[in-house]
Image 1 (cartoon, rainbow, N blue to C red):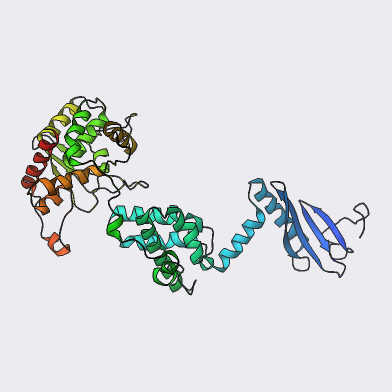
Image 2: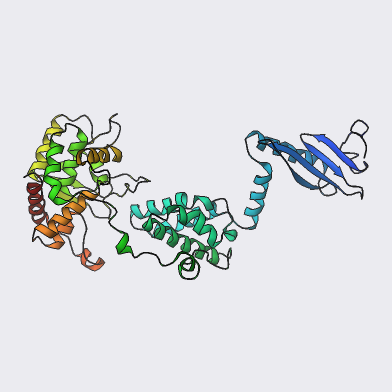
Length: 404
């Protein structure tokens, strides 16, 4: 092999005629000529102190100028911190079969049109974009059951309901991939692939109730401590407790929703903007507007807040640009209760337990107070009334109990 000083310079004219050896061509590009006469283009580079290389093909198939262009493109990727070899391999895989990320995005755009509630669409997006993120750069046809278990399900194994939701979504996604001809089997099929390895999943009824709530017997003392606090977060918790409202509904409560004369809080299904993460962007949870009768004690608190209002929101953020945060309410709840395991949403369960154990109110009316519209679709179609007077009696009794 010739020394570097005696090697002829490589140009577009002579690269097919030089003898055996390695010839630098600039921009990290080399012409490698074998003793047998075979010659190929090689791009040599180094990342994080590790030497690597990638081939650009045979010199008989790829011209000198094309190889130089490839080398320049590879150097640009290196300058951006991208491994050009990994980038090329990913592009080759995607050409043979789509990567999971673009495929699942296209699938979700179609599938979510069948979902009625915004909360369901938010959950679907979180399932595909967050929980399934480890699969995003993999080809749809190379994902195995072990990938599904180790990369997606194991990290959230303690979140039993999330595990169930994610594996159900993955099954649908891979069913679609089979229909599109990208796969022949479903690595997320529960009965044939997941259950033999994971075992039987816990029943839904055994894993629900993760929103730990205050005992209704402890509520009067808790409300007394809240009343001693001057923070608006304490007022928010008081109104939430007395109305059995959801956290998102209280956070996004606005003054134009409050009818002081008739003691009613009118919340439309579209009044709460779509949010992601934390499960808070649920609006009124269903497609029905919510008309909530306000107990006397709640109305009194709201009237005082209205006189000192500084925002369209009843409970604004500190900078007055939006609503109070979830964490602010949760922090106040834990501070006043002394129990770090409680959740704000759990106060709804406190109301439900009180109504069931301590009263004889009709279950349908109690559920309506929580904005759970009972019955099948046919029954709901004929339920035009709001039962507001009957619900007012329930919530007033509840407020009287909480503030006795």
